[in-house]
Image 1 (tube, rainbow, N blue to C red):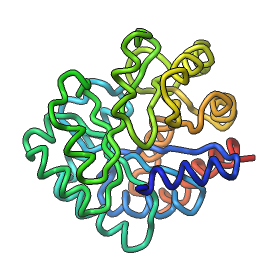
Image 2 (cartoon, helix red, strand yellow):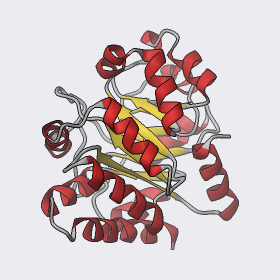
Image 3 (tube, rainbow, N blue to C red):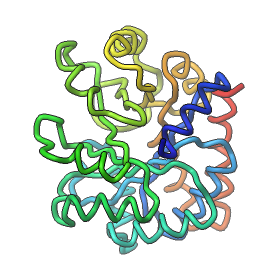
Image 4 (cartoon, rainbow, N blue to C red):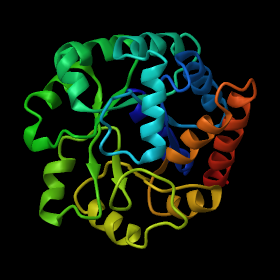
Amino acid sequence: MNRIEQKFSGLRERGEKGLVVYIGAGDPDLEATRLLALAFDKVGVDVLELGIPFSDPLADGVVNQLAAQRGLESGTTPPKVLQMVTAIRKDSQIPIVFFVYYNLLHRYGLERFIQDSKTAGVDGLLVLDLPPEESGNYVELMNAAGLAPIFLLAPTTPADRIPSLVKNGQGFLYYISREGVTGMQSKVADTIAEMTTLIRKFTPLPLAIGFGISNPEQAKQVAMHGEAIVVGSAIVNQVAQYGRSPEMVEKVSAFVGSLAKAIKS
């Protein structure tokens, strides 16, 4: 088992829910990202998703788009993100997933990117704009490297398409709980229970539910329906708020810790 599978196995044995956290790599710079990763590990984050900055992040709302822009402005590139993960691995074994657009993998070289990710200590890839039908040998390359290919499902996913989405997934499945792009919401979607029940008919993989979770109360509510929740924009928004303040890591990790406490209490 890789780190993701080990983490969810441990959560299952303890009867706990998991917290998956997303931040943009290089926002406001890569050293801040490294420090956030280490702080998140200490406050109860189970899986860290790192968004690799991209110039055209079509699946993201304005909060994460601006994070990608700040990442690009700080000089963040895929090779530099890989170097930063190598640095994280000197102090932490927190499972790490890259949240990435396929254009970056294509430009870098798919097989080379997967191998370099493995070497750096990455545990899985979530390629936002790569449907299984168009993925070629992606899953085979991931399996050979021991990395988890993580796939997305949405409220609009037809029941007859779910098997093709889940059959090659590993680690966990990311259920997008609402239509549209990433972003904070004032309330959770009302179709979560129905869709997670449907998805479970096709796979035993853990379900991580995200898109729109903004506070501890919502986190606890959504966690009832999955093995984990995913929180991104609400955290990225705080990174933007505190920016390069000396208190940024402390303030953001305190908020993240409140989310972990809410779902694990």
